[in-house]
Length: 180
Ligand code: DAT
Image (cartoon, rainbow, N blue to C red; front, side, top):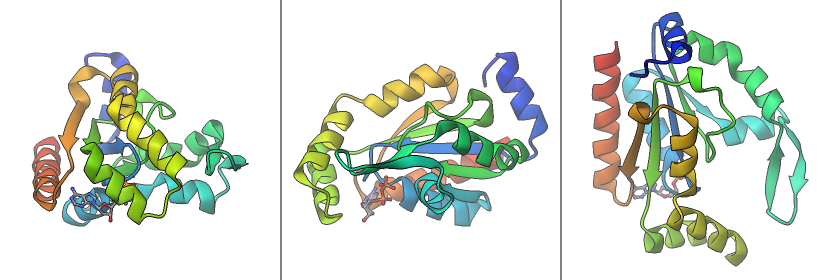
């Protein structure tokens, strides 16, 4: 656990932990979050869906085929829920959230060929597939997580196979039990 007063303060307020599950699109965040949410009784927040539902954006970027996030609106929307604890937050970026919100940050990693197939199945354009594969190769989200949170709460998890998924769910269950 972090020794920073910011993190300790955040932790003391919560009776249940908050977990951030992040990674390049297609690495399995939503699937893992859903499974872990069911078995730990933590509340799954799919941030991408929330941004669309509650219009926490500044419009659609047609070039990048994605919503332009309104960071302030998003943080305001989630502040109370996250302060109470007991959430699994699922998002493809992590630097927008305050450090004090999270007790554990999981960064999912997937091999390029596997990720390529998943993104192609999803119907992404070649441009969007290339961007995401490059991002995974250069470990963009992992670096972002390491820059945004204390090293001891950032954990990289492989997410290539169903067996990886199952072992990741078990790891989360055990971690939540130990936290409680
Ligand atoms: P994300 O939320 O990161 O965009 P997802 O959970 O929607 O990813 O998963 C994308 C697809 O890949 C979906 O069809 C489920 C599959 N998948 C995810 N993680 C996997 C894993 N570890 N093994 C096999 N398939 C996986």
